[in-house]
Image (tube, rainbow, N blue to C red; front, side, top):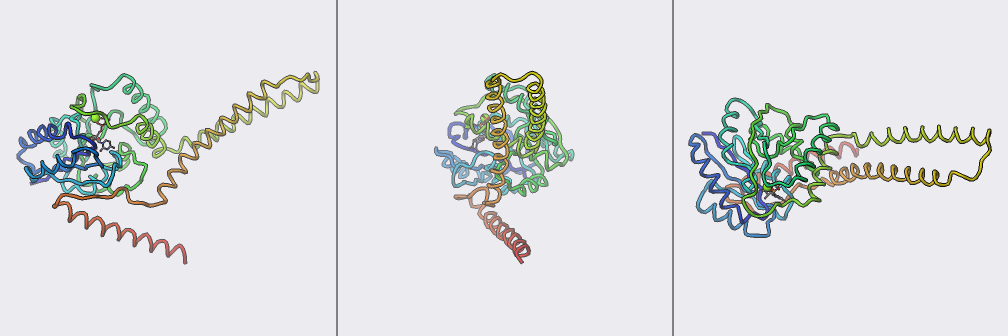
Length: 337
Ligand code: UDP
Ligand code: MG
């Protein structure tokens, strides 16, 4: 029998977790041809989330959990899920029931038809403000324009991934993560289905506006170097215009003389160029900051504890990591000698 892992990253979800679990189980119990694993990644919750998961585990042996040592954010919590999943396929779902478990059956159907990545597209977004909808739409338009890879708007993390995809994703260890872009980057056969996003079943959204902005910037800078190039082009254009202006001024002074004018235009020029320079420095800083974070080569997350079944995998993971380190250090020696 094939096993399907349901991955649920959870951060302070005590209010909805039990409800989510019962809806999920109701759907999964109908699909008798498959074995399920419910993998909860507790992303450093400060409430009773972990306790609730442990209680669920006592009643239901299919429940597994990985408890991260602090809050690392959803993107990293999902990557922990990719590392610890043991199913032949995985379905990623939010804990707040915004992703309807009813879609699971359809996803599995397409997976059996040979698709590796069955992603669900939001048809309507209930319970989200006008501003969030509007900015999200504008953002996806921008992202599509600046990046070479196709990024599908409204396709979130609600999707089924074949084992192949999970293995591929767990090899992408970058820290400024934009998982939505990664799904496309790894490739494999994709299939689109649609669903209606419901409002949160309880609790509050865990995204602060600032973290959405960070995620948005990661989206652009991880998938495109256009922001780096644009400023050199703008710089060239402005310098050429400045040169032409200078030439005109010189001619005018020669032929018509010069009263002490031009103070406002000079100040305007200084401010304008100063602004452009600061922006371009900022853009370089964004990329440099990412290089800085990646060169530290830190692990993506640490695990506080896991359920019994997952302990074995923990060991596997650490031995795999040390192997990787060995390979890297051999690489270093080669360069050093
Ligand atoms: N989440 C997480 N770590 C975080 C923030 C969120 O694991 O730091 C989880 C959260 O528990 C939920 C999912 O990510 O299962 C989506 O979060 P949320 O519903 O708050 O986001 P929204 O639906 O508003 O975009
Ligand atoms: Mg939500």
